[in-house]
Amino acid sequence: MNFFRNQLANMFTLGNLFSGTIGVIHLIQNDLHTAFLCMVISLVLDFLDGFVARALKSSSSLGAQLDSLAGMVSFGVLPGIAMFQMLGPFGSEIFGISLPFEIQYLGLFITLFSCLRLAIFNIDDEQKYFFKGLNTPTNTVLILGLLYTSHESAFVTSLVENPLFLLALTALSSWLLISPIRMIAMKFKSKRIQDNLPKIVLAAGAVLLLLFFRTLALPMLVLYYILVSVVFQKHLR
Image (cartoon, rainbow, N blue to C red; front, side):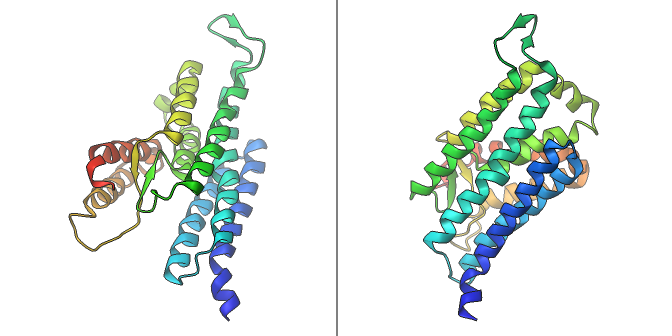
């Protein structure tokens, strides 16, 4: 019983890795719907592994390493492949300029910086009640969410069909992952409303966006998350 209790969080983590791996496979096969579903499952399992570890007081060094390794696939490789595919139609030419390589490979910088972000997180003791830089799951929602909603919105489609926008987003995403900007983490160190005000504002706004825009809200949620985090910088300590 103690073994199951101590390993339950790790089981969720391995489930996250399993789902993320399946998502990558289906994304390569252009099955966006299944890849998106796998991302959602990985997000839920990623939340549950941390929640269960804290609730059962079963956090361990092994769990921390597994979490990063699973996150590297679900929230590092997956968004990198998504950007790789969005940049695919543009070949090696952009605005009439021929490059010695296909620009889609630049999308994999998201994977590289996701790896760097996870490594930094593992050795940074500050990030207990906030994140420093955009966390990889949220970044994955931004990138894969943009690809998914491009099939539902003409405006988003126009963005995805613009190579300059995609390259700019790749650069911005890569920087945000390792930026010094403090970002909200849904971890509570007290029950005071004042201490949790950023989280309350974030949660309330997120619910409204989802109610009004449904799946189209995905990229908006990430922008809203960044905005609220910037506004409440002084509260995130």
